[in-house]
Image 1 (spheres, protein in one colour):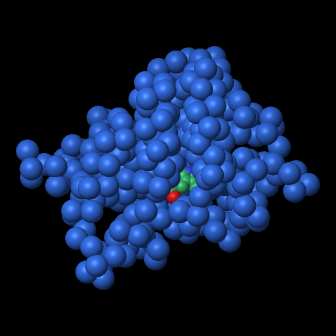
Image 2 (tube, protein in one colour):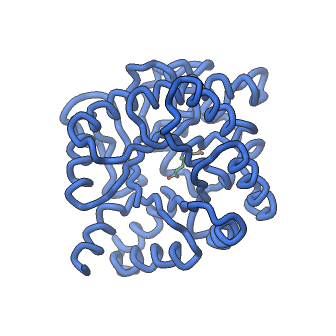
Length: 299
Ligand code: PBG
């Protein structure tokens, strides 16, 4: 179980995200409290996503490799207070890119290879800050190999890579883009690098490439609408396979539960069971604290 959280600047702040009921952008001190809660609940790992101030975004996305950026500071603060909790950090430029894209944009085109250099710099500061797992979510070609080499060269051979291997150009990411403040910045769409929802063969090719380049674990994203992909990936490769139950999936379940149309705890449990049935070894879900509570009371 991996619990994704959103962080922002400031102190003592929990700022609601309108499209994700029950989810707040947390200041660093509150993120540390969330980590303490995670440890108490038995959640082994958290993923940290930053809400970046507009002033910190530029076309080079240079805040991504600032050792004092919000994500690095949050990681150090959590590791100092709750050393046992695992930290997964996303490697993609979108939180810092004034163009809103995961890669660098030159003359309206995403430039793959130049982006790889930026991603490698980003990965190194994240590893320095104490991240246990890096999750390249950018979908550039060759990024897993580039990160693996950069990590090895810098002595971070123990940092794991969980690649967002089969990441679809999905409309289910909307609330996440609100949460990280990328909605207004994004020009166009991500279809030139994220995958076509109609295609499952390509998912297998993407996973094979990422494993060959050194990924320790792979992820399928979104989750529920792509369970067939999860099942195919697990059956074909037998590697640790994670599903990301994304922001739009969370929003759907929460909206229906808030209206009394669905039983919240039952649909949460059933959706997680579905991931297990499909063969997933792990799940990233915004419902993680509730899941842990449900599981703890059952045991
Ligand atoms: C950024 C990233 C996204 C998500 C995780 N990392 C959004 C995107 O690709 O636009 C989505 C997660 C979610 O919707 O919960 N590269």
